[in-house]
Image (cartoon, rainbow over all chains, first blue to last red; front, side, top):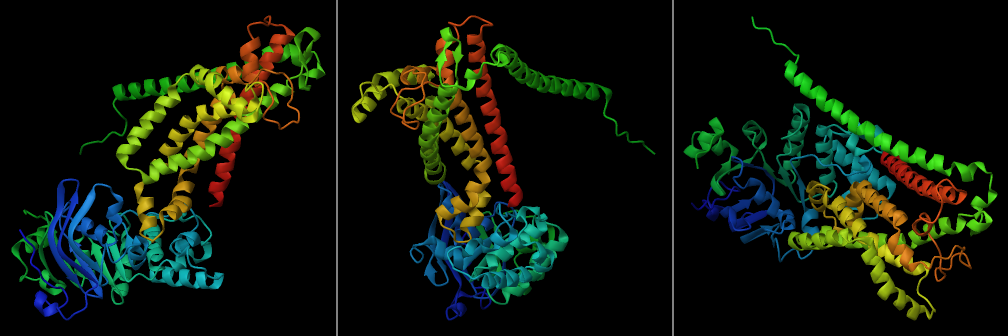
Length: 271
Length: 299
């Protein structure tokens, strides 16, 4: 089954979207792990702002798509892909000979919170190691990012303490703030609320909505309610292929495809 | 209304108690063995310690004159160990980083298997290689009459402990979960930055453990060192001259323990050196644990 080549920018027609700028463009993208095809023939065009949620059952290939957008998947020696990926107007491979440049532009936060074995302050500045910042500048950047992640009030008085002392929800918000410090042009979130408490989940949802007004955010989620609350656009994947993609209003309406409706209402996919 | 009992069935309770007792007995036995070793060494060291023979911390070792100065052996052990460690640790750490961080998993398996075979080769085999080749190369290199010197023993010991240190260090580095690497790389950090800032701090306890095991082997190694060190019971002159012959505690024990009469001052002095070895190992273990705990608390 080939995925429909639709644009999320202007409804559902790629022809309509040709004039619109795209932050991410995938054409005939297929991803493999060894000989296994994980994702096949995906065509995507994502707009320069807004929150795009990737939904679908486990093993549908949502995380695989996300992980190729900043080439974190190439760290796995058996992972490969074919087709075309453009990020911010440049080919993801040839356009970014230095992969660290791509990763600074395309921030990513993973499912499991992961803080580094150092203080909250040092965690926040980890991505800015190459920049020479004064203490005042560093403090200002940290404050701004932690405030955006709704964590400043909780940690402002203990920035020198180990980040590992924070709760899981706080750690995940720290990861978001840490990614934000780099002022990414795209933000990838791989189920960021899957393993944390409801209070932190709500804070992260607020963060995503707020940041989505400035930059494109692509978020994998299994939580249909969450996708409904925060997304501007939704892509439904099943068995490595896009079943349907469109605006939130379309995807959560009776006009969506039958498979999408079944998955959204019953969280079950028979692809 | 049904009543739920929180007590486990009696058979399970007894099985658990049995397992608990077995574990406790095993732990107690381990402590007992360590205690017995220390006590035995202390008791057998008694004659030389209680005679008030001040020469025990002297530099002369001559059993027929009642001189049992252990300083040359103690210094030899520390000197040889230092040379071995200064060779094995940097090389081992760099190689472990290379294998763990940059090579493919297939090559890693091949290298690891080879290293594990090297770590299991009996020390006498290393000693024979030392006597046959290393000894002669060192003599030629430094234009010496004999290559049986402290430097040769240090290099040989360094080669011997290298596979142990390398393979355990590689294990410690590889054991750091992938999520740390992925999170660090997703922040745009270069490979070396990821290693130095994230992986190394996470793996430091494991690396310290590898270092301690390697140190333990370096301190306790007898046969290979005995064959190449030259067995001279004197402090080098000048003191830090690695090109002079020397003696380590273990090589001294290996040579003389069967020649001494049980319970004699000679035997007692040898046992005392064994006690010193154990105490040095205990000190190193405690010191490294304390050091790392302090650092962890400061992070």
